[in-house]
Length: 205
Length: 205
Image (cartoon, rainbow over all chains, first blue to last red; front, side, top):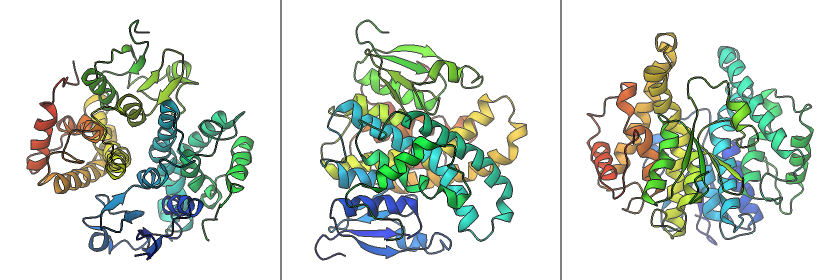
């Protein structure tokens, strides 16, 4: 455990879902002790994460009293609610959640999965059909973001919130999955805006 | 719009995601005006939901002032936060979200998708391979729920919360996707417990 905070994060360096947690923690000055797990060889997952995370995935957070918490976006709310990264207004809070559920249902299963298969799985050729299908879904997700971000600075309430952290995580590395962001000027401007926030750290920090 | 509340729900009667919203609204005595859309013929989605929901899905809520809200679990939080269905404790609130993100990432894409393909798509044979793959994932989700619910009454904080509504929606109709719940006694007892909550309505109410 981290001595000054007692928060342990089961982490994978290349995982955008884990990066969300590391990015918010950095911006909140919350130190994390990282316990690294592989996203390719998952044979130790049940042994390490059993009883901590019903989905046996990273990120998994363990508090200083041993209580575990799973799902990247739930962890963001645990760390971020009550800070400047979460609006107080009821509708805006629900909008943050809307974009986070969009991320986990539409965006991550396409863009993150394609990135993993293309750049990290070591067997991209074997998954060519799945990559093609998911790539098409990924562009639908990017289309939705482009339409929403056109004329807006951030996803919700014209300010940087947990929603931006959640969508930034895999959008900013979409090129690793061979996604072309050239036709998405509003998304690219938003990526720059997120990366220029105080306390920002890159995924490979 | 519903005259007494002004809340419009773009709905599909057979959708578990929409049922979540109808169930919570019934238990909160919030009247909804339902606008029915098909989950099979989706050709009108862009025309009807464009500008309201980036994912063009039901449920989509429209408030009396015209502000839209998408994603079933975000809508539950909009309606339910501050009521007896959401804990006040920071960790328990995050646990509710954890199970809702589990639902949308692991449970719904397997159990709900198999149910749709088997019982509603009209072309189950065509999707036999996808049904087989997703069925296996669905049993993994049920295994995780069974392990967690063994020795517990509800998913979070030993009380009925939004998390139970979210997971109940598709678990209680999993048999329509040919899932066998016989090996899941803790899940079955929990289903009965959820169905006996005050104000409960069935999916076909």
